[in-house]
Image 1 (cartoon, rainbow, N blue to C red):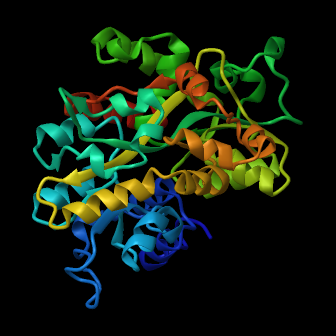
Image 2 (cartoon, rainbow, N blue to C red):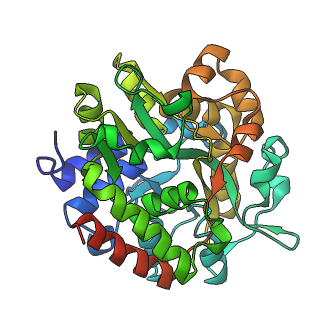
Amino acid sequence: MSKKEMTVDEMMEKAAEGKLSRRQFSQLLGAAGVSLVAMPMFSRSTEAAGEEAFYFTWGGYDVPELLGYYQEKHGALPDMAPYASSSEALTKVQAGFEVDVLHPCNTNIGTWIDAGVVQPFDLSKLPNWPDMIPSLTEIGHRGDDHYFAAMDWGQNSITYRTDLVDLKNGEESWGLLWDERYAGKIGILANEGDTWWCAAIYAGIPFEEIHTEENIEKVAELLRKQQPLVLAYYDDVTTMEQSLASGELVAAMTWNETPTRLKKEGVPVKFANPKEGALTWVCGAVIHAEAKHLDKAHDVINSLISPESGRFLIDDYGYGHSNTKAFDLVSEERLAELGLSRNPTELLQSGKYQTEMTVEFQSKTASLFSEIKAGF
């Protein structure tokens, strides 16, 4: 079903069932011109209202498989509802929407802390915290306080057809997406929040310098050179994956969930490990500053960072997880198939972490990328 054929109700239903990833859910709503901020506020079930913690998260993460610890301890699941983007979740919370736990990402956790909408954890109530990947516990860490419990992480890279692509010098590089041999057979994500940063990696721009006028123009010029080679800029990841499966595309900028799905369908693809580094993202859980179920909010988070939840995210979604013990629950063969390993720190260190984005930078790059996609 294409983005034009799927109604908003169907999108919501599929997200709730875990059939759409958070990114697909967000992109499909955006392509349909729908904002969750403009939609009616979610309400908790009549029976559970006021009893259980309320978890406000991306579509596809409001599933029982991630909340086993909470369900075992309380005999019920927390109340849950999906959102399409971190900015929309923040807007709703600031407008008075009552929640206990939310699921932002590393690029905006500082904004949330500064806005005063989150509170630090009581680490004594998170028995799974000691098993977290150490580098991930530093995100959202201020002074002696931890505001962010990293849960899922992954990468933006290139999914390419191994039977249709001849790598130059046998090396995997972002340059594949600028290779004129494959003009008209390259797919690019339609949002600057991913594409701009991947182009910056290829350009050799340090992320701490990505905001300068000189480097903004450098990335823009690189994307202008790429534009004639691109078959399409995709809002709908499903359509992109279908084009890779058919051979209409031979290479595309994707998240690591795409090769996971395509391999299950028998499509000969590989998720590249570019010599310049992949773009790494990290998302996790926070407790709302005015959470009404504080102990249960900690139980939600302890569930999300548990090894069992990690196994589900790794095996079913193809993402990495913050708990080191989660990787022991997945076979070596499956980890290798997903491009992961028993030592996730090595993979995290090889990637490039996005830094926090200012409103001005987001606005400028969004405007420039819209012009570039249109051929200007």
